[in-house]
Image (cartoon, rainbow, N blue to C red; front, side, top):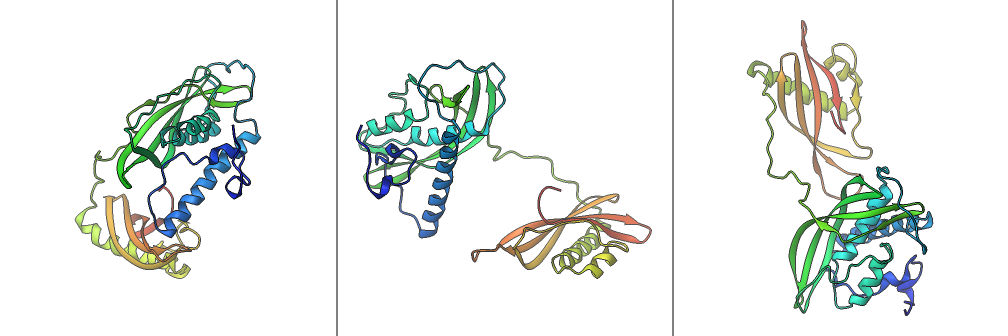
Length: 304
């Protein structure tokens, strides 16, 4: 096998992976290219670290570990990297086979697993491990992949596919042990759930007004106002993401009952870098008592 040379091969843990056998990615903006490059570096960094720790199999027979071996995050990284190469098909099938062999147990048969019409290639735009489950001697990882197909210089959306990648957990590492099998993507889009109970009409407007005042005081770090709204002392608060700057405090959506009111206040914010702004929900828990409504807790980030 000829070894790649030159700048493209410098610093690669597996230089043969640099073979140009996949279709060229579609034209993108400079920012998108930078993000994709960062993601690619991170992905191969995970693979490199795993290999240095004995993640990938070496020559010689090994016996699988006992059934019920715990799930391994390293296996998810291998499964995601493998599926990217498995679904990427160009003209150089031999180079693709060499890349796939880096992830598989010796003797794993993958030839002909993915077939494309003449003159059409396939390119993986994004891949991520969704979940993993232990099986006898290893784990199975469900991986989501979004694919693009290219022909005559034009790209066509190939949709989001889900595959279960079988992995053997061996005494010295993790490796793909067979052909991936398609599965239903674990997505819940289009599903519905019961709507939260709307607050009593008599409380909804004053509770929303109080929640907005609390969030305004919260983002301004106004302890005096927070103590007043909290009934004498500032309520517990989960901080906003570090470095994010508040632009405006919007409306409040109040739900719950008289004894357990909650408001979601829409806050437009800007992250530490970039020029985009985002609407962030800030949750305010409210209580009713002899003195009226008070603020019990403010949650600027994370789950309630």
